[in-house]
Image 1 (tube, rainbow, N blue to C red):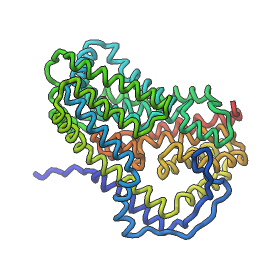
Image 2: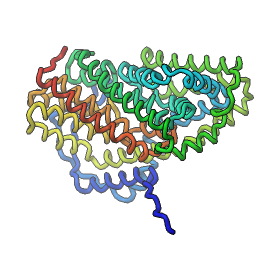
Image 3: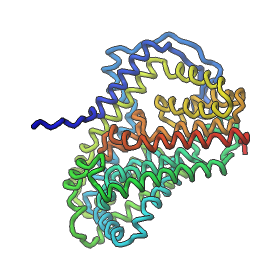
Image 4: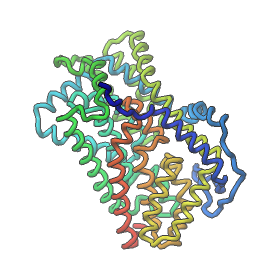
Length: 468
């Protein structure tokens, strides 16, 4: 008897390249357009009322075939970061210290009901605070390599291991109350006092973070009782086989392991200090973890050749992630070369004036969400859209503070799912989770985020939320 073949979604690269093709086709139908830009405080900012049509630049077969290569070039920084961090963590993991710490946590988790109930909410809250205060984004990538093995050892799956740091930081980023890279820049462009409106933003942060925690916690409980329901069940079974140390009998943690864990902990502390005080970004963070891997290898008395071998093996595991990042960046390359991003922004923003102020504020949020697909950078999107949205808000009866909040939600929520985000694709690549599986799992939460965002934008319009 023939069995019905189970339908499988296409490979992630097929999906992403299909989007590249669609965007290329759109360049043949959407006219080219551009805003004038000026340099201000080290940023390129558009002039709000300067939109004009330019000669269309339809993207053909040659552009399509070059898109992945150019994606590699334009995403070189994040790609290099993934390579270095992947190799560095492979060295640290080869010491056995991370596995030993995970086994210890797993044993404590199984013996304590309090720890079982509080672990996910507590860890996600910590990451959410990091997202809200200093805009944790790229910094979350290394944590995936720790939290997935931890989640697997606790009876969860790779999605839970990814969601704890990534959705935690993402929810905090979307509901941020300080984040200088999004709120700070947007408020500066909108001529609002720095950190103004913080109390309502904290309220939004609590709601958004709480929603993410409940969603992940309920899913984690379901997967722990019925592991086969996980979208990554088969892949996780393979991961467990490839990491037998996670299910072995608990060995004692050696002095070398302690030294490795201490050096790793110090690296995480330096990461926070460096980002907050010295403005570290991808190159410095990559260097930090590379240095930490050398110290960890020396502490565990690994031979240099063994460290090099582990480093190379770690970089090999990142190849799928690198291809996905490059292909996804190709989407932005095609849209930018086709001169359609500014045209789309102008067309969408001009429609907002037709709505009642309450709906206009919500429309701003939806427009920002759409634009974020093409500009998945918080600071970049602020520089592009806020010079347009801030004066537009004055015309439609929406305060500039509300316009900033609409930008914040539009930028933050969709960052956790769009394939054009280098951070999202790097996180999924690190976790070896296909984008289509992640997107299908996350879609219900995304819809809830959009709904809660629309609701949270109503009080600011009704009460004319001002500068303070």
